[in-house]
Amino acid sequence: MLKVYICPNCGNYRFVTSYNYTCYKCHCAMTLADIEYKKYIDLNSDERQAITNRYKTRV
Ligand SMILES: [Zn+2]
Image (cartoon, rainbow, N blue to C red; front, side, top):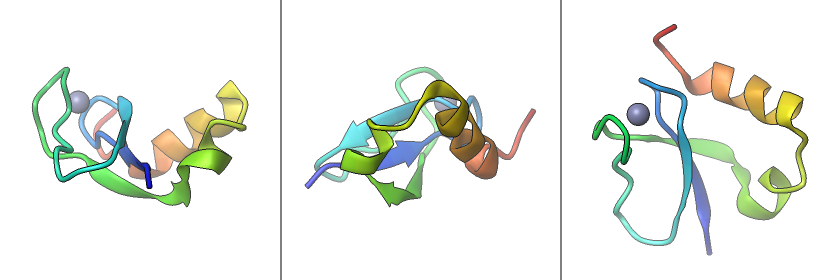
């Protein structure tokens, strides 16, 4: 099953099936988001942004 990972550094997200969860932009380790892929893709951009903000540690 796909999992949603969010980069705490740049806020980038990606969907991951394996253990390859490195951000392709800044190459740091990404954080597993507490949301299913199926739910995530149904979100609008504002809702996605809210989730990103929860995991993003740098502004
Ligand atoms: Zn990143």
